[in-house]
Image 1: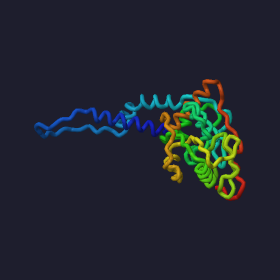
Image 2: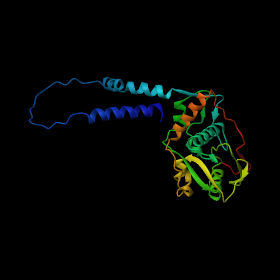
Image 3: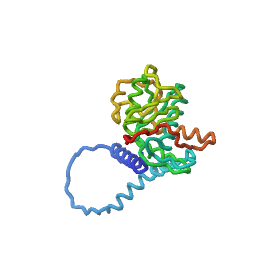
Image 4: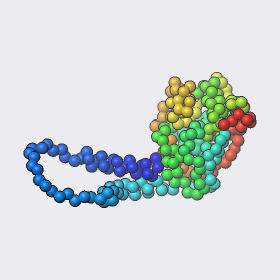
Length: 258
């Protein structure tokens, strides 16, 4: 959620609390009097609201401005692969494996789920993660049989590529994912693979209805953006900078990509 939207939430919450805490009265008697009412200017009214919200807005600005990492070079969004997509999916993979102890084959997220086109080089702040991931998507792990995983990869190929983590490689040919390699090994149609992704995809979003009936692995619920923030803080605590480069994870080998 951006500064302005979250500030608005705080403002609305304050106003509703003020209203809900007001005492309730019943009319006992009525009397009519002429009384001159001083008109309050709109500017004065807004100033009072601003004064009421200011402490919350200041606190929010402080939280959003927290530096949680250092980015070595600009991370930009693109297809079939990009530094920004590689950064996000790798962070998802490492966080999930660290928290769950599971052997995750790879992590992915839909291209449209990345909501900004770039994060500049320099300090990575909390607001950057909120801007790139403004929705309350939860990080989940799905167990996918190889044949169903191939269907997911073909879907990604038709879309021209999604962000995928290290460990997965394939080539797009005639809108299909071919020469698939997972940790260096060919995709086995009968093997089960664990894939980390946003619950938006697992629940059928972005036309992934073929995943709806797959039950996710039970794990602690965490918003995807909170997972990314946690991963960045941990990386910073080790004195490491954030870097992502093109690795030919997805190769477009025909003229049919989007």
